[in-house]
Image (cartoon, rainbow, N blue to C red; front, side, top):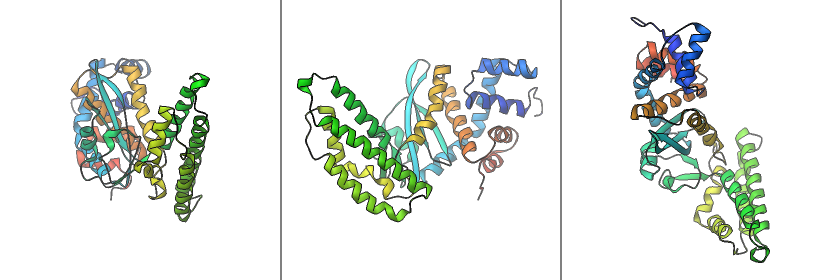
Length: 321
């Protein structure tokens, strides 16, 4: 790079160590100094990230637009800190794309800013209300429901024997078993082990089974609340994966994706400025998208630093058509 003391390969590697490996800027500096004899201050590593994020912003926005027209998208969010204040790190993505956004709020307006008003795909998510207006259909995470049932069972056991409802334990056990069977079915359908023609009969069979499990009223309030949801109009979203090919029955994809920011938050305690929030939204999105496109992230970052935006965008995708 003309006029630069540190070349694009070193800068790309430093960005990767920070954004993918979650290493602090000071330790990135130490790695380069001790392993490669290359000296720079931590502020220089911050500058590498910010310049890369600025140049990559149009590609980042393009990922958002691509997700808005995707058939299936997973979504989740986790807590974040910026300059000591509570924020939220949002995630939207699928097997091909990843998009992170750090925001002060955890509201429906943020969800709409991610997916737009015309999202027509299937959103795989938990039951958080901010997503209710997103998409024509959605898949409730069955793993969340199974964990909820497990927690309800544990909470119920803490009650005095005289206050326990004998119907709660069988209800909780049956719901967890049902969720497990549905998850196994979803895996078999997505892997091709089971033909798609089996989905509709399975939908009817499991719907009847769910109705039988929820037949008896429950006096323990948390269990009764879960039963109300499972019998209500939103219960159809338990079986969306049986109506739309390619939809997973759980939101494990989003939880595993957002976990990288959870670990990073523990290491760095979040960000300290608006530019830091932007950097740690843009670069993780592009690095993870590159990995999902089977593109070497460090090699792609080098392209980003040395070529124009159209060339970097084309290099990000394994199928540029």
